[in-house]
Length: 98
Image 1 (cartoon, helix red, strand yellow):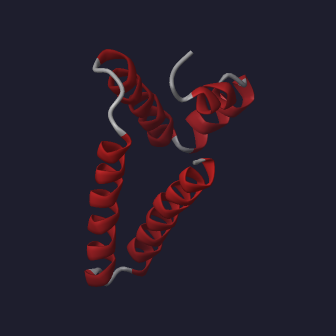
Image 2 (cartoon, one colour):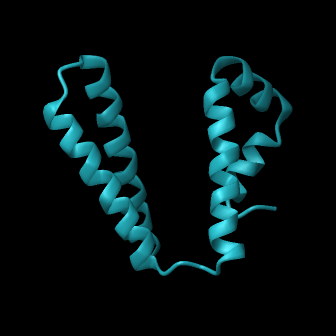
């Protein structure tokens, strides 16, 4: 089992996996790539400190906010808002776990 146990459990359902591959094949491939990278980080290289993970999330969040402030496309703005909300949601849930 990978570090992304919940994702792996959801993808173990053949109906979910087939639907994801049909509706959003790029997302399906992305999930596999992210799973492999996360496994490498946590197993191959040893666990990164929480500070390093938060630093990466902070950098990504800052990039999204910067892009949001300068984009003219309504569709791309909405996508960036979703990405920002997702990162903030992860940080919020992480804080609740501490």
